[in-house]
Image (tube, rainbow over all chains, first blue to last red; front, side, top):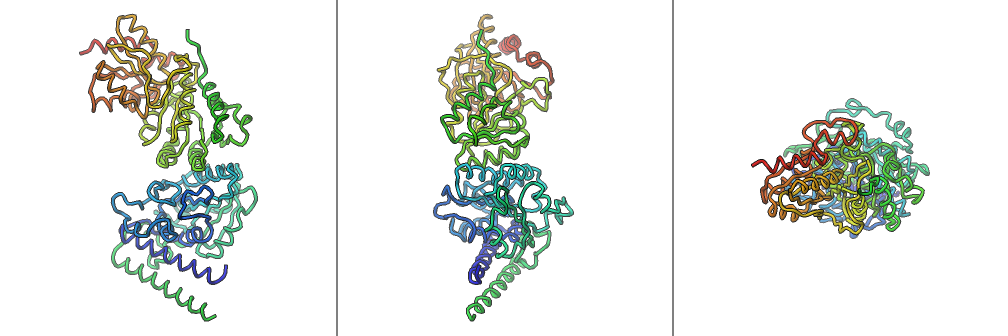
Length: 288
Length: 312
């Protein structure tokens, strides 16, 4: 990926973070921590990796994206709006009665949403079924999944993981947004699934560990699936919870953020700073 | 004497027949295919049978995902393990997502008679009918099992069908008009309506005859589709007859009687008696004796109806 393309993705990621803030402005509260930690992954998916058509969201040959950790939906809404699946004014309805952007995604309310998730431990098996069905149809489409690390304690995930490897679903790629935190504290203190990579390998998956905020790492690795023929692929993406909102980064109490005016202002300031840095970068790259 | 047929074998044959005509049908197994009459499916339809082992929660999700690609997954296993155990997956992945998946609970109700309360399924109708959009089919004879399979395949949307295990008598001719959501009047009468469903429909059938012999005129109705309920038939019966007795191999809580009472109490209140299992874990033992323990044998149904008609 050249510098210009990288810069474009970074600008898009900033827009998506701004959209997340816009949602919070409307609804006053939401699961920001895990939405912000997965911005780069979701940006890479919607603006580089997924073969999709916003004008034709049910196109049978489309790649599927399953947000297993449904509470991260702010990042999904933010990305879908930016990608043109619906008008971004929809984001301003967050929190209102009958809003099409509920606290967990609802496929019947908006185009581009593939699954009704929210209850944890459902997405991986649904995605496995999609991968199986697409293979039966001899479709080249792929299934991408985003899971949280706290979510891994749900036993149903491990049923799904076993079945995906048993049925050799090498047309699917799972990202685990390993931000190391869940509501009650560090994932390793609450219910540790480490070493994650070894655990998934023992379930028959091909595993890579990357920096989940590094676009090059995300895209270069995701472009190489299947990592091993006949095996489902997994990327463990190390991330920082609430990435981008400096006051909240890596802090457990921003898993669900009840906003207040001071923190809203800080968040806007942080995003403005990122914008300034990106502008500088653009100018520098223009000079080169 | 009516011919006796194996419900699971009948079910499996019907799925195989349907799969010959419809290439989208795929079968999912939780180590449960052969016990569901589908032993021959994998060899007849290679590539359309998926074994998952004993992981019913995960299979619900896999079925949902398969359905998003246009497949019609049929998932048959022991009834409590496709209803109570993965209830949230049924609700979210099939119901809430409105996926075209056909879930079949076999050895349902008390028909795993010796295996005790963990393997009985006398709460399945109660819990599954809380899920909006799910069609619940509870056929009472082998002919309607076959018809029910075809109807649920033709219907687009999530379905739950329950079938028993011991051989059951044929009650209907092959050309019976079977439509989802439409009850069948097996016999008309005027003194009392006896409404049955599923495995004990045949018991209600005999009870109706015994009542006729005792001089009581019975309208016998088969509600093979518990949801959506045939409102029209139930309400016209309430108006015409005014006394309803329901018969089911299920908890009284939340079952057929309960759903009929929910309707009648609001639209046309009538006297009702519900025959089923009370608020207790069912016991174990020979199947017919177990039914007798809960008042579900024809002679007992007859006595209950007579007593009911004699109360003011």
